[in-house]
Length: 336
Image (cartoon, rainbow, N blue to C red; front, side, top):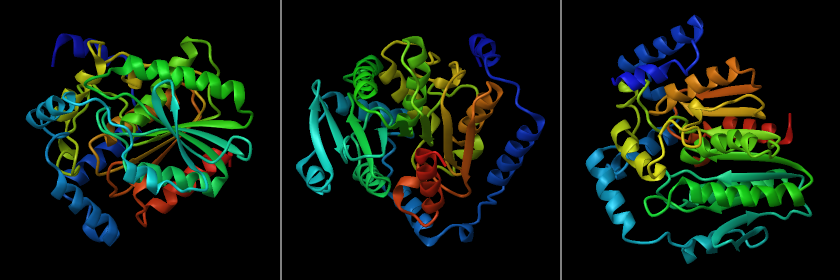
């Protein structure tokens, strides 16, 4: 570990002994293979097997990530393919152009009770998935919500600043036009971005949303201060070396510890009521737990929902175990 890393480690809070004990117990359970298959639904087990089968290494190894980025750089971000847009529910789904960025919306401003700005995951390099759109469509329908999903610029042809500029402009307009409560939510990279964006709002004088939700948020993209070894064999898709390679492309030369990239190192004072959700079988799990404790020590109103035996971003995949998390997300948005 470099001297600089040791120096920066002090930025993280001292974790309570009880919490450290819990993490150590979970780590020991992971190392012993204590996450027994029968504790998960057949659907959850099957989903993990599928993820392992289709994993081509582009998010789990340096070689795979570098090859993926080279291929990705050959083409500009693609608009939503026709087959995806045709899947959007005709009664409440639309795709509009916002300053050259596609913006998917579900519901309407006039008829909605709640508003959600949803930032999709994909390691800042991958297009939105039908799973994301399906999740947002059902969210809008269940809660009579207006849901906005920006199809933001992706690395390696674009870096974080372009997305920040677009999100800032969009959020300013939301504050001016929308009178009901606003939730900013995201998953994975989008979850980390949602949190970092809320930290950033304080620096530019814009008010916070009413609620903040992170589904398996990527809160520390440098990934140098945590022991991930016990979780590497559990995660079917992600690994540290591949993610670190991707992170550099998104950063565009900015320090990976800059709070605009890694909210783990940002200022949480004044952030809105926050819900964090993670699974125990994902590489990001220990960092999310660490960030939860950091928010608590900063005096934030924050809740951590842990999906035992669950993989990365499990709430959006329609698993039996997703139901509790989805119900909790709904209650957070409506303020209950």
